Image (cartoon, rainbow, N blue to C red):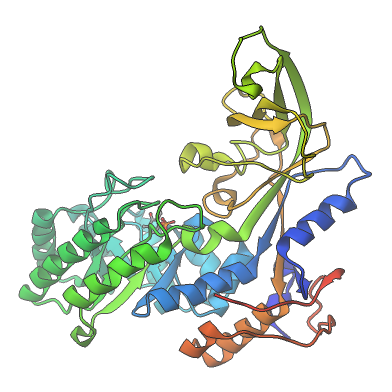
Length: 460
Ligand SMILES: Cc1ncc(COP(=O)(O)O)c(C=O)c1O
C-alpha cells in the first residue's frame, strides 16, 4: 500500500480533463445551499511535482533542499520526500517533521545560523550533521553540543533588490569569513562549505553571480586553511509563480554559467539550494467567502474615472485575513489579487472596493482598493498563488480557524511520482507526456470524486 494513503495525506484524484479549479468549483457548489461556507484551499500536488521536474531541467547540477518554513503542510513534505528532495530545516520541530516521513539525516540541512543549544543537541542525536553558521559564538556552541557537525559558512549577499531581505540578519562578510574559518580550525570543527541566500523574491539574478563568486573566495580561504571544502549551498530566492517580475529560467540562465565558471563540474563540489517559494506558491489556491458587506455612499467627486465617479464604494469582509493566510501581506510583502468565482456580466457596473479580513482589527485589510462589481454576502473570491508563506505562519487570532486544505493530484502525476520514488529521478522523465487509462478506481483508498476523476498529461 502506498505511503500516500495514510490519514494525513488524503487527496482527491483528478479525472481526465479536470483541474484543481474544477475541484474548487465543486467544493463551492457543494455548500451553495448551506450557511457553512468556510474559507478553504485546493492544493495541486501535481504542481509541486512539475516544479521538481522543471528544477532539474533548469538547474541540472543543483540538488534542491526544500525550505520547510515556506509551507510545512505534511502533504507537501511527503510529496517532496517521495521525490527524493532534501530539506532545509530551521528548527527541531521541522527536523522532527521531516524525519517523521522517513527522510534520512543526510538529506537534511539545519540551515539556521543562530540555533538554540538544545536544538543543536537534538540535531546531533537525530544524526543531522549539516548546519550553517555565521558567527564565532555559534562555532563555540557547536564545538560543545555537536562536535561531529559538518558546518557550512553562511556569507552575506547584496540583497538590496530582494522583496524580503535576509542579509540584514545573517551572513558573514568576506573578511569575517577568514576569521571564522581560522577559529573553526582552532576549535577542530569540520567546515565543509559555504552557503548564502540572495533574499526571498530575488529581482536581480546578478546577485547570484556575485554571491557565487564570493563563495569561491571563501572556498579558497577554507582550502588554504586545510579544510576539505565540498559543499556549495546557493540558498533560495527563486520565484514561485508566473506573475513574478523575474522568471525562474531568467535566473537559472545566469546561475548556470556562474557555477560552471567558479565551481566547474570537475571541481567535485556538490551544489545544493534551499528553494521554498519556488516549490509551493502556485500549487495553492484559496477560496474565501464574503461574510459581511458595507455600502459607503460617497460625495460626488466630478471625476471622469467611471469607477471613481460612482456614487458608492463597497467594503467586503471575508472569512480569512492578515492574521490567517493573508499574513503574507504583512510578513512577505505580498500583493494579492482577487478573482471572482462568479463571472461578471459584460455590462456589469464596477465600483471601487476594499476587502477586509474577519477579525476586529483595523489592520486586517487584504486589499485597499480594487475595481469589482457589486457582490453579495455568500459570494466567493479566489486567490491564486497562495502556497508560500501563508499557511505556515497563519494564526487563529480572534478564534478564526485556518482554512482546510484539500489536496488534489492527477493520476499521471501520481504514477510519475511512484516511478521517481522507485527508480530515482531520470532526465527523460521531464519531457514525458503521459496518458493513462480512464479508470478511477484506486486501490489505496485515496478520496475520490466521481465527477472529477482521472487525468491528463504532465507538461513541464
Ligand atoms: C535559510 C533560508 N533558506 C531558504 C529560504 C527559502 O527562501 P525562498 O522561499 O525565497 O526560496 C529561506 C527563507 O527565508 C531561508 O531563510
